[in-house]
Length: 131
Image (tube, rainbow, N blue to C red; front, side, top):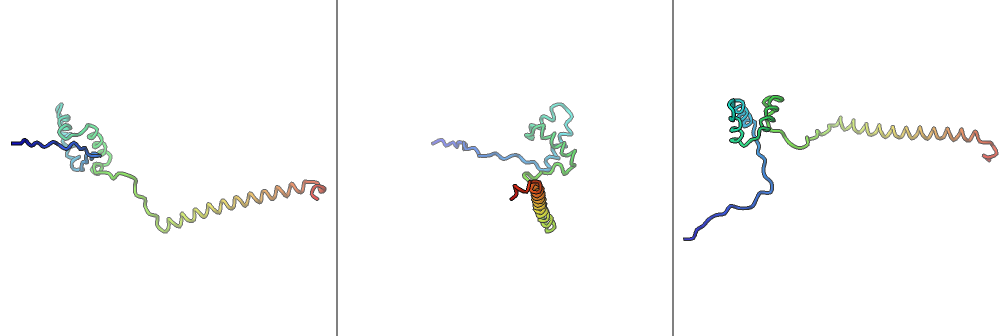
């Protein structure tokens, strides 16, 4: 009779998944942790649930800060930008136009100043050199 044994698959997954806790699980664990009064009870709870004490600290802080909503999962990543409506688009367009007009006005003022200085220099030159 041949002996058949199955060997476990040695392949390891590329990326492990993080554990995610629902708000209800967090509340349940926090209430159990709050009931732990005797030495060692809290450590046993953490070992049984597979948690670190930092989990409890973070969850308690979130509960204190935001109440029940603080334990709800948060969306990760950048926040979605609000699409500008017609009024916002018009404001942006007008601001661009304003910056262009300001730059053009500054150039015109510079040219007028240069013309005034050139005219003044030409007036100060003796007539013999201007011919």
